[in-house]
Image 1 (cartoon, rainbow, N blue to C red):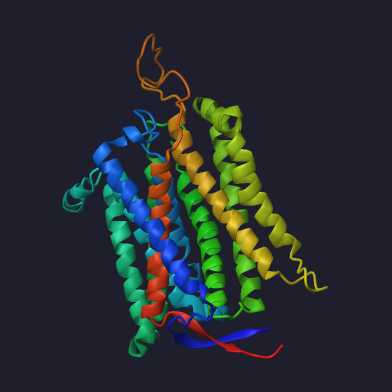
Image 2 (cartoon, helix red, strand yellow; image 1 turned 60 degrees about the vertical axis):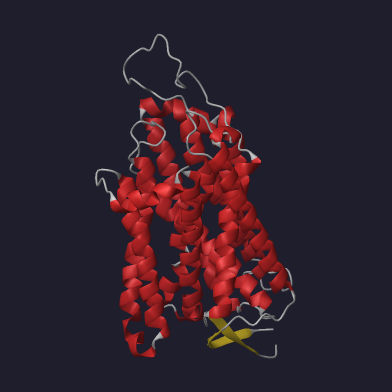
Length: 403
């Protein structure tokens, strides 16, 4: 059965699973809040973090959500900026998804830093030599730009400005993701991160995870409406995800080849590609995040049809889920892996004795408190999304046609 969309409406769940979904997301969010509260009052001693691993698993969740938020605008910008009409019914959903993902990521980030009460100081005191100060403007500005973008869509008098707002949102998301990548690329104290190529790598990663998240959310919304995604939309999403994964492959190869070329990065590459973290890099990033999506998207076979050229919705969803998981693994390798490596406190010098974590690989094992806080951010993002869909006319209105 084909499904066409005309206009927008409030989400009208045609299946009983909507209430259960909200309750499950609420429970995950509440547990995440409790984990943050317990870590705040007990201290980071209950986590797997230490003096060398200072950014733990919650930071992996937070950065993954922020990067995915940038890429979730793909649907809106494809319609408003590049004129692909297939995505037009999903522009509002794309923008709202980007905003809630950023909100969830920032919530985890603030709660994991240990002193959320000092957020006001961070918002009023700036050190513009620090990339962190730049990101305060980038994140808050992203929210403002998305609100303006939505306003141009909702108000018919301003619909003519939608393209201009879309161009601004597209440019802002590129700068935002560049800033997120530069957080790591500018950390010269960590030789595993000291590379400007991390900025375009994060942009490519945002395209992959954002497109994957958008495809999954669109499928869930269509399911709740007792509808189905049109085959043309499935095909378009598949092509966008395919080229995004190919771009990620290119920048990932370039990143590792650059590190292998620079002698001082050889130890870090041996850590990532070898036994220490290779068990996660090869099956996680390469296998699940790259090989499986490419295999599913390039084969383009539909199990229920003899037409091998049409992409199956099930293949798209499986490719999106695997690409999303692989993206999280890549963020883990960048964030945790770079801290696991022995830090060079005095480059070019021989350290005869030291009690700091510069002598070998630092151990790290995340506790359930960190997992709870991370998943709490994901739950908060999705809870906000499905509540907004019931408050604002964001959901495409399906019109069913006979096969």
